[in-house]
Image 1 (tube, helix red, strand yellow):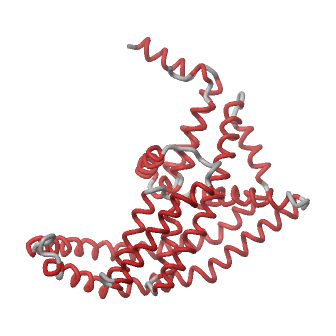
Image 2: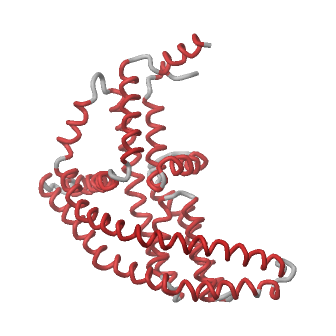
Image 3: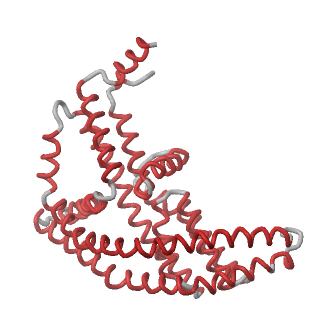
Length: 352
């Protein structure tokens, strides 16, 4: 048994580079696990700077100097960020506040709707089932009320943290963007020995993730804008809030589309009732999701990450349980990284 284990380890770690890379990977995972919340602004800034590098290179392709392209890129970032803070964030805040104030009324409408189900659909729902449902809701409300008090206290601290992040964010992006060459060279010098495998991993990651991340930004904008047009044309409440949720739901493959459907359907049902407008809302929303999955995604991501849907769903659940929200957010990049590591690992060291 010991000899077999020793043979297995030798196959996996047969040279210095694989050992060093494994130690670096373990070290990075430990840092993220213990200091992930502290490093949040740094991680987001690195992702945004990575996106902006692609824009900078695109601007440079028009015979513009590197330094001027950097200035134009960072200016676009600042203008876009300011527009979001000045225009979109206040709208979202107002609609979120309105939604919170409307919760009692919405909840009463929901209870009335549920209580009428046995009359409208006696073959599907019985009065006893409704009674059991109301008891369960009453129990849940007690725990929710207690959690709201705790959340309101924690919300003050979170607001201060968010304000600090907003101040730090553009500063970090500036340094990661303008000084990225020195930062990358400094990190490379820390890693001893050969770096051929690391180079191969980076080449594959850069090609796939650049297409994936930029494609996701475009998909968020298109899906969110289309949802806003549908919701606004039907007069649905909380249009901006729901549209942003629908747009960002594409970041979580398959699962996100399912989860965001719940608030859209619930708000539509409570506002319109079961009628023509509700059916039209659901029909157009499902059409949007179908067009996104079957038309938009294949066009945008034709050269992007090639992972089986089962692997993607597995990655979402596994990394989500390990790292929480950011595990879900970065599930595809992490899965792509694992795939790149597997492809770049010395062929002689792989298990047959």
